[in-house]
Image (cartoon, rainbow, N blue to C red; front, side, top):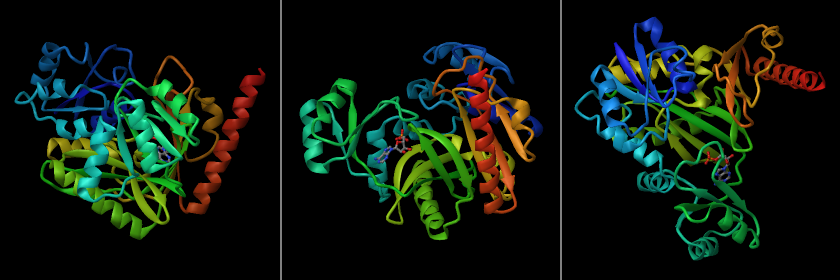
Length: 370
Ligand code: AMP
């Protein structure tokens, strides 16, 4: 079985690694060959609007998928008829635009922060009059990991926010005073089989996911989140893994955004669930039966951003699994790898996570001191 994957980042790499034992081969497509995916599987290089190359790739694949959310939707739709494309390009089109995404949540009755589209400085002032302060001004497109966002807390921030982001389609949204952030990962197969992972609790630093603990056990929220995900999945007759990130405010879920792909907050499922999100995505898009999404214990995932820890020091802690994405260049804010640990209880998990975080901090200090 051959899956063509547009984008060869760490998500693609983990898809490929999940596919090998099942006899599934991924062929990647990206601008350059030395990518996390390209290091573990064949890769065709080209621009994302080079339809001839993309068609060549699709013709030799059983199914086309993507690991990158900014794949041009037009390039995907141009491949229709050559191979099935999952998740559906229509879902990707919505996820690429924060305004369409929020409108879909509203249409389906999924709570989301109050929002207004902003095209001009006057629109921004009008949106602030309606929604108030604090609020967040975000680019509608190409925003990720907290990029393309400006938080406004006082009237004098308006001019600064406009000069930082103005001149492109924007959205102004109400600031949610949340108690925690959670995400739900669901999977729907070609045969309309549905499965949900337990909720993950996520902690962000500077808009980037820092760590995830799962399962986050809150049965009422789990049921509600599953209902919301099901509505989106059925709306698109979606095939593959879908993630929605929520704020928890006053005990209620408020949807922030959706990702039509495997997700960073689901990396714990590799060691911490019976079937990983990566394997289930492949099973879903190939029309195979889904695997159990049950958690095996209590997991924590820690992202390595900007630098990787010393491998040997990290691995002195029993039960820690290291994932190095093979990126040659370390840059501030760049995700280079992650570690997962699985424990028998949430208490033991929290203790192990604390120990790991402390160990990482001290290795960082030592590295700096050298
Ligand atoms: P995003 O790129 O939309 O996922 O935003 C990155 C992070 O910024 C989120 O995980 C939140 O921590 C924070 N954030 C984004 N939007 C809001 C909001 N409307 N209210 C409060 N915090 C937000």
